[in-house]
Image (tube, rainbow, N blue to C red; front, side, top):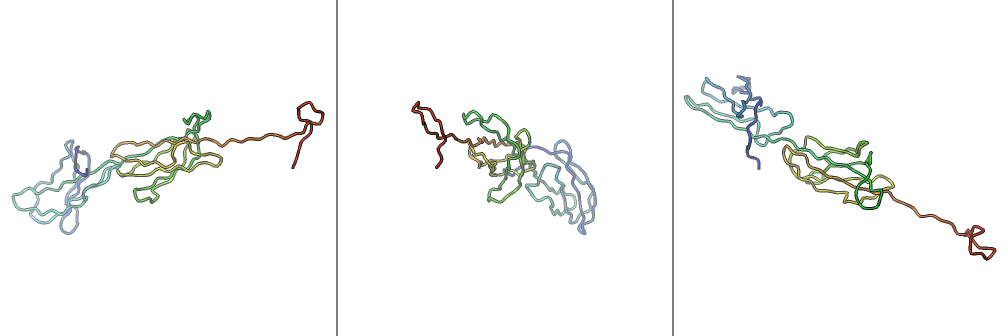
Length: 198
């Protein structure tokens, strides 16, 4: 919801003067707090550097005017990236559930506007994953291997929640075939004796 819920410690905060020069650097404590003390009144910019695996919800550069004898504030909200993972398996007993992993299956991730975010393929265990995703709505699309068709829908909408892994699994089945012969009975015993061709 773009508001801060839990404190983030170890976040680097940099204070710049009105010329863009670094005045000081610090990190947030266990309560997510930081401070720059004993500052001369004037204009500053406070810059937050996102931790790996996080992105800023609020601007990470905030101009601040320090007034004599007063405390000014600059607060930041980040959100953790999420992920989508899943498996592609094949149904070998015609019950529409996956029995064996399928590797080399192309999986495409689309954003909420239908633009391609990333593409990957399943590994030997039929697994795939998309990591470091900004929270939001995505569509995961599976492209059937040659000789296979989807048992489950091959396009799934997934909502990625900050800091969580969402899943989208797929089941395919291999095409089969029917073959046989046509023969003629030449000795009247109701069994085929000679092949018949067109």
